[in-house]
Image 1 (cartoon, rainbow, N blue to C red):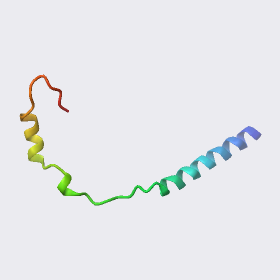
Image 2: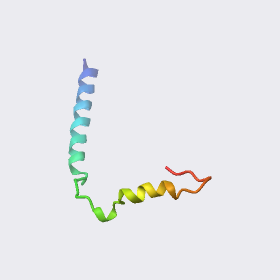
Image 3: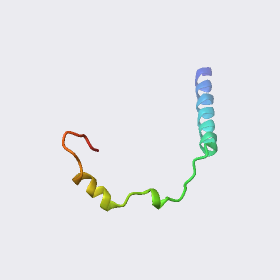
Length: 57
């Protein structure tokens, strides 16, 4: 029984500390900087410009 109580306490502590750290981590949604996003036309041209014997993803 003591082992179950200790396991429950550890689980509760881990859950609460995870929630606290996620709130404090500084990650927030930010607007997209469209000047840094490539347009779709250049993405299509990237496969046409690919050289043989090179691996492109």
